[in-house]
Length: 430
Image (cartoon, rainbow, N blue to C red):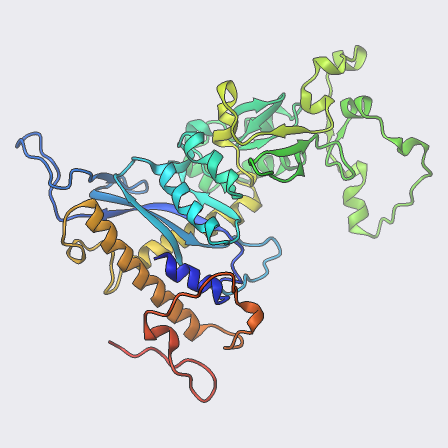
């Protein structure tokens, strides 16, 4: 199945794709019956099990297929994304609820070996519950950024790192107001899906208190963050930071502010929220060693593989602020691509969810059947995309990746004859 992905990549069809991936597990039912303790019978598919659907709670006896779908997030400026075929980038067939995280890592590792870009990876709460060494840590080391969702008991305060509280997957200033920290504590799914004005204001008010990214992830997935009051563009005013890190601006000449320019008005200190320091700290300032490390140091390192008492950092941390506008424009579109792909693969004449299309029992046989069916699905996606896409029909030599051999086309659907106008004719019915 990866041959279709490699072919699309080498021919330049994926040049409009930014590397975002949606990972999800879908049910693959089988013809055999499950084991019955009442009747004393066992199933001939000994590796099959019950796949529980998260949305409805229904269960299906069979296997779980981990699918990675090419997707994209919505930009803040609402610019339309570039066209690309939304292919199935890889799959793994396994027993339900077994090796959920490792199966996703296996698929993503194959993509990085093909030289495909890495963007944002969005996954549902089944992957948030994985152990960090089996999912979150290796995914970050592959170069992906995470966009996750949480259960009710996981929302709100989740832990801390170097004195900075971990709130809904993001590290905040240690002096963040408590109402903002606990805004989503105990919030149920209905409240999160349709938050009121009061909750939305608190979530958006967290923005200036987020620790700022100073250095992107390294080869091990570690990042460096700094105090929101530091750097050349601080987002808050903090007396503690000014005491520990005095600025040299006091000796510089006065700066003229153009009040007609929105950029100068929003970056002025009067437009930033002020961090409230306790009266005791104002009267008797403690030494730098007694304060959180994120306050005293210029920046702190956030590892991808935190262990021990800090395992919650590796488990719950994500790279998009939870429930804020960037998260809504990232998580929901990518997840919709997953659901749309599942519906497309399980409909029509192909229908990978139809037991009759995979009559032979056994996990290996089922995996081979599924690989062939998903290969056909990818070829159909490419055929449709080549037929209906806008823009020039011919690609230049610069659009091709010639680092490896180009696999031969296995179906004439990709090489349809062209009409006099230079476009592909609609596919004929078979």
